[in-house]
Length: 123
Image 1 (cartoon, one colour):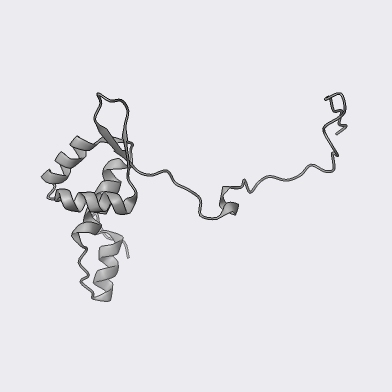
Image 2 (image 1 turned 30 degrees about the vertical axis):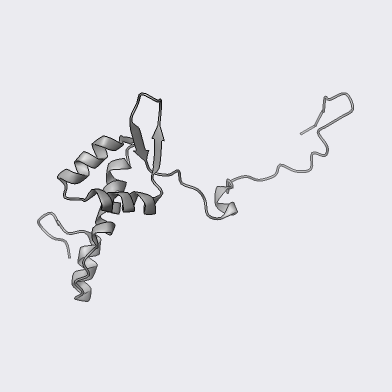
């Protein structure tokens, strides 16, 4: 049934309410979610991230643990610049995931290499 007003709860909160469970997220889980949210648009200066975390009630130690668990990339562009944090690059878990699924062969073309380095293939 559709609500007439905007819904302010998340899907997780709705599922927890339906189950009757009151699972509370840990400070580490909250810090990991917070880190993902601030880094989703690109790298952020580490000093800025730490300052914003403190303002949002996340302890430095918890932020450090969350960044380690998420594999946050910590880079320095130059010796005079500060550190920058970013989400790690996404890596496929299965080799097939990295293959283009729309590729197909055109038929038998044979060996494209010839003695003189020029191949002629009739399509």
